[in-house]
Amino acid sequence: MSQNTEFSVQLAHRYDQRGTLRWLVSHVWRYKLFAILTMACYILAWLVFTPTAFLVVLSLGGGPGGAMLCLVGYLGLLAAALAWRFRSGAWKRIELIEPALV
Picture 1 (tube, helix red, strand yellow):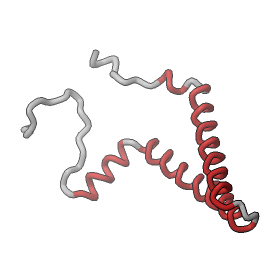
Picture 2 (picture 1 turned 60 degrees about the horizontal axis):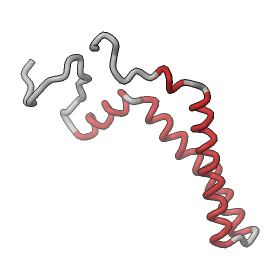
Picture 3 (picture 1 turned 180 degrees about the vertical axis):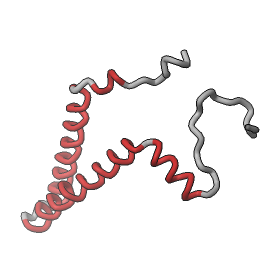
């Protein structure tokens, strides 16, 4: 296998570089959890923040202050989700360096 790089990494993941779309899909396929979490945050924004801000600003006459309050509430929900993830201890099982390579 010939490489056009200065150095090589043992057991490195190979991405499909035959086109831009293939390269993007190969990255998303490799990091499925990141893609799922990104979509979950996007859906949460549309299901929680947007309707709440719409109701507060237009129906209740909250104005810019009401929109900012909704934004703070949305960020609080995201912070609570991250705190729940931290307390679950899942971060302790992450392997940054594979034991076989060390």
